[in-house]
Image (cartoon, rainbow, N blue to C red; front, side, top):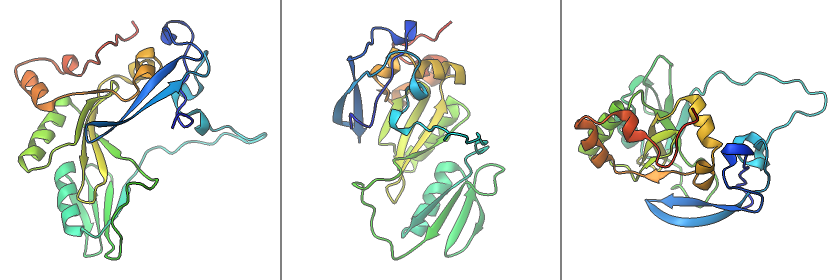
Length: 243
């Protein structure tokens, strides 16, 4: 893993005390249990490559190649399952989604003006998922406000659906769930503006902990309902935005 994740420190105030040869720790969680602490070595100081993303994944144009436009949006996800009814019920509840078209083989769901954001396909021959294989780790859906996220958490909890992890990532504030097939789903809000999030992800605070800090949604909901502001609740400990 240490070869897969390489983080780049910036010069000046954003670099803090990090220098070439220094290490930071990546902490990987599973069901709120730390399963791996990996020491990562800072390998360069200066303008960050891809602003701290995986160096090995950097894309460069070939000689003479012209830049082309990126997609304008992420459109939808399609899930295949043997638990067709259970998956349809779970996803409609979690996303407050409506059926745009459905039959015994495939159902298209959406929660906005897109024709479908999620499709679920019944394939009875499928084997059970194997979490030891490479593939998608999770996908995320953003709510408009902290109140909306907390309301969804409370609705799902009343129906027996609870997150396996609740965390403040800094740039977003999240609850992680598993659907009936075990797919991992993040429900979140953006906790920072795009500019502040970019600054945060290039800060020594993020370099030292690019995962985040665990939070207790029930305790935070009590504070929120008592009148504490959303800004105060989602504020990331130890980080002050650049003025």
